[in-house]
Image (cartoon, rainbow, N blue to C red; front, side, top):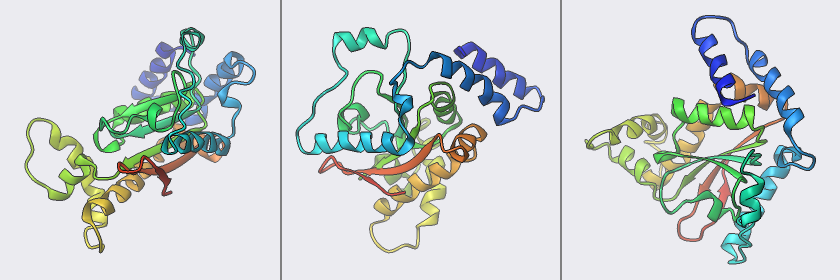
Amino acid sequence: MERRDFLKLGVTGAFGLVVTASDLLSPVEQVQAAELPPGSPQSLSPDAALQKLMEGNQRFIQHQSQHPDQSQGRLQEVAQAQHPFATILSCADSRVPAEIIFDYGIGDIFDVRIAGNIATPEAIGSIEYAVALLDTPLLMVLGHERCGAVTAAVQNKALLGEIGSFVKAIKPAVEQVKDQSGDAVENAVVANVYYQIERLKRSPLLTERLQSDKLKIVGGRYDLDTGRVTIIT
């Protein structure tokens, strides 16, 4: 299924026809089964994909990065089709580049980056594309230490331009832990990961993959000081 076909399905639903998650996924799965090459990343189970991702982070924090899939050959290999083994919703912070902190390369990770790692409609649509069309078995929501977006939401100050839009998206998570002891920003960073995952689970496309054990959703926290990613949910 090409991108234009996926968009047509979305338009059909928008005009009031009853389109279930199964209706959307069935043709996608049929096409993907035909297109995926033997030994592709999608042959990984969700748990195996998570293990592979975390092994890369271990290489990074131990200063043993291998920088895989960054050659000219890899560039040509994925030029016509992509089969990433993981999708990551992470903060747009310049200190949290997924391919570097997980030690992977071109075509390995489907990155969705936005300040505060928030699940906006556009972010959710991008993730649905990766999961339903590219068949990635793993989705991680990755928050990080001392996140500026979360800090702004905790401080609740007036902000310029559209900056306040992502603060608004994080505020419900801040409210959940406002009376919790400890560092307010750190508490909110963790709560925000949980909150954004709950938003993602409202997607029928993602829910169906979860229920059929074709997708695993996890939350992670990145430590800016050590480079370590810790699974928190």
